Image (cartoon, rainbow, N blue to C red):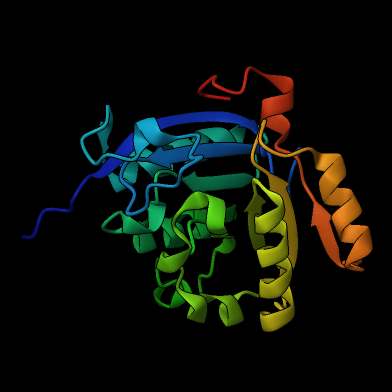
Length: 224
């Protein structure tokens, strides 16, 4: 019998969603190690290496954590990283979490094909589009954008005026069906500047979103 491969779990905790359409709601966070990108402003670089400190977690263990969270009234599970979609067996985890009646949000970096995960048991995606300041824009998989639906989010993280201009081009070129959020790189651009840009470009359907967890806790603190 083939042994199931363990998931590389960097940390797990219950906190509020800091961003996305369920910002402010409690969620169980499952953070996995390993990422195929190296964004210049990444705030979870410590989890990006496959061999970063982690626990080898079975599918049953992760579903158990979810059951425990649900017993505490938590209705959301956020899969994050690193890049969670690189975990072998992540599709089975998503299906299992959905069967438990939980809303599963997958935070993905925009470079991994999401089409294999769009089926009967479909998670909600919060997908990044990496803008110039990330140094990773060339890695974006543009065929992902049309797959995003109303319940999903396209997040454009901006660290400069150049990023804002490029974000505008992406929004106008692809006209995503999903919700579109502009989010500042913490400490690199003033949110007020982004609001002025939204006004100038008539971005009435786009939302500015600040990372709530960085406003509540120290931006470098883990497990929140």
